[in-house]
Length: 229
Image (cartoon, rainbow, N blue to C red; front, side):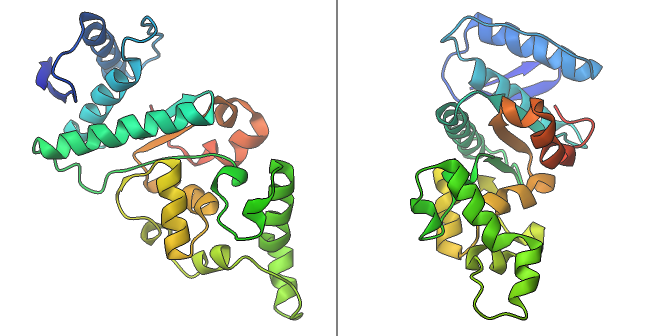
């Protein structure tokens, strides 16, 4: 369905919008218009995610100079659920005449959840996956491999080095499974790919940990523009 909040046309992927959802979107638009902070609340199970995504994607696409949306969640299943909701919304918008040209939405998660290396991906512990990945991708290891022939590197990571970040991922919305499937099919590392395309993404969905932990935030969240939502 399509409706307006002030002058903003909102595409909502369901036949009915609840009063709570509409009020939530109105409050969200006011905070975006004022470029201020907002604390919005809705009861559980009333469609907060689709309401937030519908309003902000409409806002991004309607007003020039669209801002990146950074959506934080708690668990990997919740991240993937939000990505699936976003994917459904973008498909619905396109079915209803919205081009959403060059739109990119994806999630960030650990190496363990995204690794496609045949041997490393079989490891059960995330710490082991991290360590083995670094042993094949660290700059000093790659430099040493130029003079010594017995050092194993990650082919998925190496292929990315010859590509421009803007060419790594076609437009679209990628669940974590979509991202790993794309990386495996194209010989690219999904973990590092997702981080390389941050500057070009319209929506990033990841754990609160990536925003609140200073060490992780320094590596990931510093790439976000100051006016990100």
